[in-house]
Amino acid sequence: MKLRIIPLGGQSNVTKNMFVYELWENDQIRDILLVDCGVGFVSELSNLGVDFVIPDVSYLKDKLHLIRALLITHGHDDHIGATPYIVPQLKHPKIFAPKLAALLIGEKFKELNIINQIEQIKYHQDYDFAGFKIRYIHMTHSIPDTTHIFIQTPAGNVYHGSDFKFDLTPVYGEPPDFAEINRAGSIGVKVLLSDALGAEREGYTLSEKIVGNTFEEEMRRTKGRFFMTTFASNISRIKQCVEAALKFNRKLCFVGRTMKRNMEIAVNEGYIRLSREHIITEEQVKRANPKSVCVILTGSQGEFNSALDKVSQGKHPFLKVNSQDRILFSADPIPGNETHVGEVIENLIELGAEVIYTAIRDQLHTSGHGSQGDHKLLVRLTKPQYLVPIGTTIKHGRAYANVMEDLGYRENEILRLHDGEPLVLEAGKISTESPIPLREMLVDGHSVGDVGERILKERESLGKEGVLIVLVKGDKVELISKGFVFNERSLFTELEGLALRTIKKSKDPKALADNLIAVLSGFINTRFERSPEIIPVIV
Image (cartoon, rainbow, N blue to C red; front, side):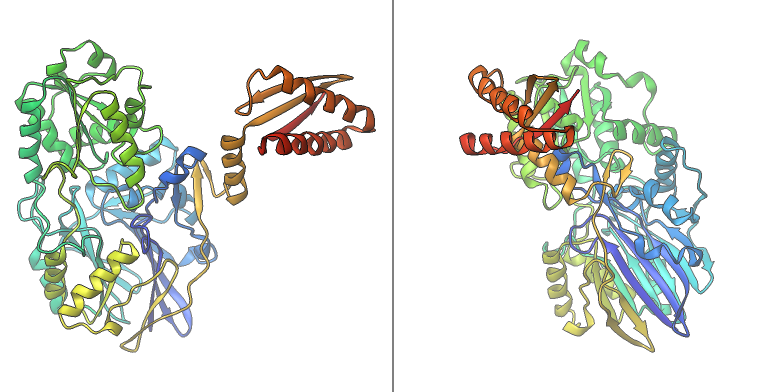
């Protein structure tokens, strides 16, 4: 028997987490188990119309009959956000997820009219999926109902330890189930896949509870409205902000589509205790006493066109900030988003708001990811033979390896995989194989994978260079410019003259269109060193 583990994402850019577990027998795949199905965030492409990126599941297309289940570890979008786009491609495998993740996935499916089985998992229970036996283990992170998964196979056992920290005083729910983690270690763990995003930090990651005191202190200092931005799925963080707001008699306003949807679930299911009378709309915020308002909104990562991005540019129809308002960022930028977050912060400062973020204030945010002490403790409890850092960047993976070498692990016992690179466990030995081909699957609205490099380059060119439309009606020409020049009459006179001469020389519409593009683009490039998109319209 052979076990292959293939990361389809999450090995170089933190997000887009998805893993394929393959059980092989007699050189054939017998069973497949999938773990997580998340989106990747691409802020640098958001102004080109790209919403996010999802894992490429092309490799699975001829193996759909072998997929036994999709297992979800927790409800953050980088672990569940791709389910509405990928599950239909995989012919709707049954999903197993902890309660909050199951509810969040269910809401995503409702929006797109997707019908799929979702089972809320139970702890202290074994699930059998053909050759796989799995057991969910309660863990703590920055969202309730976070889990690890112990996967037993004939080829060896794997402890799938995605995002976690050992929080002994969680805001919601119980602390980690140390007995179950220790049980897995006693049964035997061949390979530990461990969250490694906090591997550069010494010690243990602080409890979520420390942030609650910070909210109260900052609210006490706020003369106007209090704004807090974080991930819409960070229910534990939002819960503490809500509790602080109620203590200071502030009404709550939730802004952003995902924030509103998640809060509806959190309140209805008892994750957050909040009566409807304490919730106001964005329109009501405009009319309310500023000292009685707390706004919780999306946009902590500087996402283009998010609620906070609109506020920072003065484009939100109801939320306008001033010098009395305080805006608190309770989330650190995901690697790669630092520039976008910085731009939003500076825009808000320019509008006069008091902006509080981690570089100038401690305990605004505590990571949901364990530090070196958390990583070491998980290793000591599970006692694995081999280690694989996951959900990380290249530098954090290297930092994790350095920490584990201090625990006595040799370099060949710590495997840092790339996306698509299979890890193979066979006859007690471990190895890697050549990566399977993967491509970037960009999501643009409801379009998946249709936006490629060529389209992105075209959009970038349109944004930088503009458009010149040449409307030809018989022997008359009208020019319409967008993003190139505006009302340059003298220039348009020259261009119209060129176009009219080109019309006289061209015999058919196809040749005319080609000639107009060639002549006008050559003229504009020579005169202005610009290359607007030229679109002939021949009536």
